[in-house]
Image 1 (cartoon, chains in turn blue, red):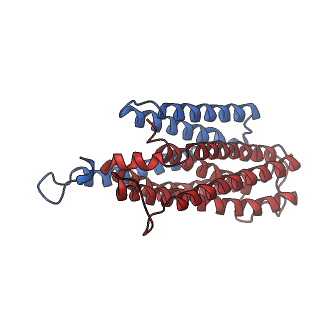
Image 2: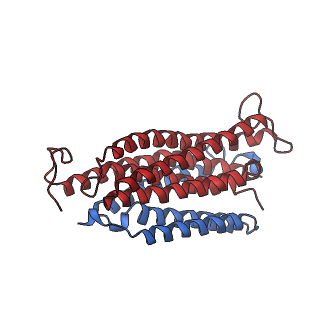
Image 3: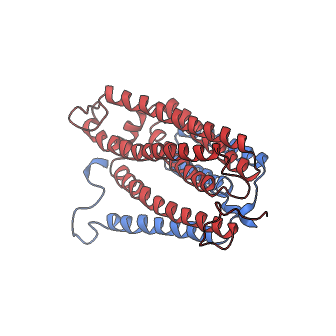
Length: 107
Length: 215
């Protein structure tokens, strides 16, 4: 039954309008200097937009439980990818082994 | 639900319902793999932007925010028409389905044409990494990494768009024969998932590439 849930057109249009609004906000915020907050706001909006697309356009909200399981697993693996690579680079040079990262340019 | 036609139900499935769940689940496994594939590019971006945020901001400033923003609207619009295509199939509106698929493909092509003009402008401004790369001092050659990632990430995204438009043409040809309706529309649904995924990649690419050098 869940596989045949028909999402009302009005909801699709509402999602589209929200995505447009978030796009406008993210462009506007990019012109303000908020320091590190710029990245937080930018990524927060991108994650929100992606969530809207996933839940409604990709029907995950109405799908059987298996689909969210696969989606969450993929996000977890993505976090592992980021986590392990960053734990390597962040700790470089801690014990005097190897050159620290970031290398010279940024400072 | 009406009875399955032999052509719609493959022999290994008990019901159309089971068949649809299987194909959707398989598509999500593919998309999980795609997330990790693009994840590699995003983690590379993070590492090198962390290493040289000034050069990334300066490089980002050279991108055309108007064209990038326009393409964002185009792509999100194409996601809406794609969602409407699935909706049309679910509600047995064959002509509407064909119309929305054509609209989705047209918007996809608009995106690619705009991308072509962006790429050629970068070429003329010597912003393509390689022997001819030139960037104003004091950043100079440090900006090359940003543009390498710009072309790798948007190029891989554009390749997904090209493949998407090609698959869409195939789905469209099948839709025109009246193959898809409320009983059977798995290919439309699964293609839609792919299309929305490519849209999501752009939702992250646009701010990370175009919007980090504005303030």
